[in-house]
Image 1 (tube, rainbow over the protein chains, first blue to last red):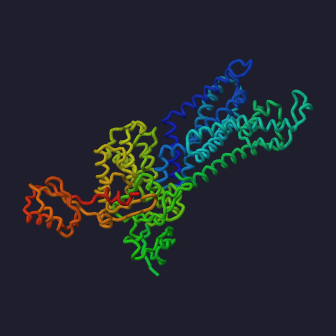
Image 2 (image 1 turned 135 degrees about the vertical axis):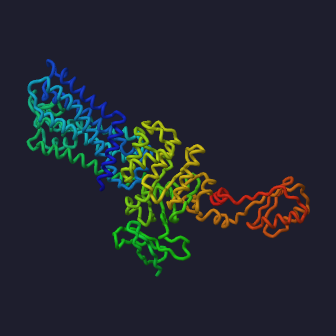
Image 3 (image 1 turned 90 degrees about the vertical axis):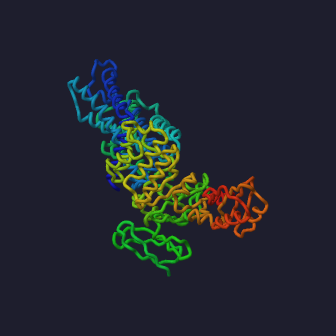
Length: 281
Length: 352
């Protein structure tokens, strides 16, 4: 692989997104949401909440928004160029298909990470200036984990952009993926849990004893992994698991969860490269 | 067993290849270790040798589902020539071009560009190529210069070259205007500028005049001829047959996925036994004059309309016809010769 080619493609992706104001819009949206949720989001809260509180409020909105942004950013990465016709010209240059996928992934990843960093970073600095206790490490972990969540969905979207041949189908696929990980899988897993656990024995307000397979299954959902990572590293966040008082197992660790998120990113990146390699343009 | 000399496209070392006629041999350059293929040509197989070929397509077959788009297509584009690639819509032209650039994966056959196998060393092979696709597209949010700069980075061309090409193709005043706001003709001209970036030794142009106004057509045609003078090999697929006839040294015609002919236009006309037409206008027609012309050996058909004779005849008959008409008392007012056109050749080769 030639790094100059990869850098050129990545730069082009960044420039393209700067020109269509995408970066600016999403960064501003993240910053405004963070500030609004920090100031108004807590029940009974008076003005600015500290960063820890802001994270727990923001985690839920992040699990909704960041996957959408990752998917929207990537679902036409390959397909859009094929549809528009510019992929012909790109592939006629002295470059491999793998270099194109790597370049596109890195460029779009840079756009995604930059928007998250600037959006949350700017809001975090503003909040930090208005509150007394500031834990920048926690906030950095939150930003880092959020970037990884975004990258998982970006990888998925790029893979789907190599699978579908029409923009509308790819968009439908992206929306389905979002519903799958956001709604369908958690409900299915919880349904399976409820079907197998004796609910009548659960004391209200106490934790449910959850079988190991359930925690294994939740690793199949990057959104659950993200929520679990935040809970494990930064304290409880309002994920579906914690809201139902499902405790995290002892074998969960921050390293394991980050590792699995990395595997998710790699899995779809490899699938995208494999699929694109075989595609007729 | 026949042997063949092949020049390495990377280090220009001459490599001798041995094999059976028609056999495609994988070879590695002893000097730079570049891997490629060569098809052994017999003396009667084709007039061009593989080593002459800037582009060599051998037995290319590509199908989509159950539809065979290209079947056993073989042709050689010689170095420094302008090679026209013709065919009706859906004949397999664009499929062939896409296979040449590794945009689609061939089911069978080999394609080499400057001796480098496209399917094995696509990246190396494409270093030699500038490509103008049929559907020219750019990144619409970027300006002409930003677009060209992106391609220039990969092709190791300079910003000065980008600016020069933009100016040469009449886009110098577009400045910060995004390509998304360009007219179709402007996009086509920018596409040609992109193809020329880095001065590639081979140009593959798919419908280069598409969407252009007459001035644009002339600009592109002149540029193609200028590139030929510089030694560039040019492969042109076009529907404008008069233009192809004007600029191309040789043509190949593809019909329903099969290469049905390849030669110079004159060669194809001769193979089809197409004859020139001589149109003679006389001051007064007479039966004696008509009989004199029809009696000439080499005259195949005479059609008379008023004072005009349309004579289909062998190539070197013009002088004899003039003499026969004068001897028969005809007073010639005007004489025109119309050679067989590529259009006639095309129609004959592609008729159902």
